[in-house]
Amino acid sequence: MPTPPPDARDTLILLRPDFLDQGTRWFCPYSAQVRGMLAYYPELADSLEVVEVDFARPRELLAELLGDGGKSLPVLVLHETSPAEVAGVTVAEAQGRRYVDKTIEILRYLAVTRGTSPPH
Ligand SMILES: N[C@@H](CCC(=O)N[C@@H](CS)C(=O)NCC(=O)O)C(=O)O
Image (cartoon, rainbow, N blue to C red; front, side, top):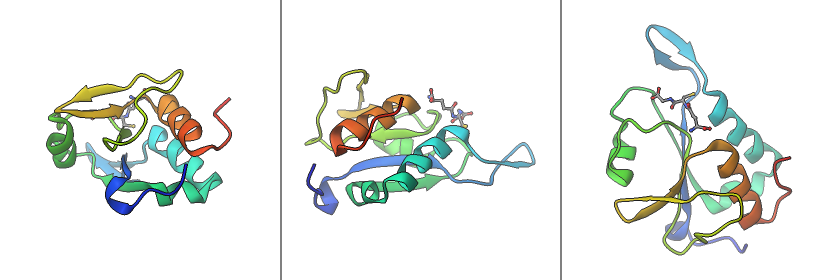
């Protein structure tokens, strides 16, 4: 996939590492998997708007984009021009926006649409 212009990128929303929940600092193992794929294939970042948010709910960006500030992360919100049908990936829709919210399917979607190796 050619690198899309900045205003046509998919938005990847992750939990910021060392987020605070009930007085303890954590990292999100699901977000870490996606970060791992971005580390393997640094060129992926050029095709994404990557945003890290805090654990506290409501999560403002999720509320704004998908109307659900309590949604679990990570989430990949697809640009309207991005492919909506990828084998093995369930693309959901909210507020007219399409998104993928299962971590393994986010990895699969990125692999198929960006041309990297897929997750095993
Ligand atoms: N939908 C994800 C699960 C992701 C998940 O459970 N993330 C946690 C953080 S590590 C979360 O956001 N939980 C919801 C919450 O407690 O607000 C998947 O199947 O991969």
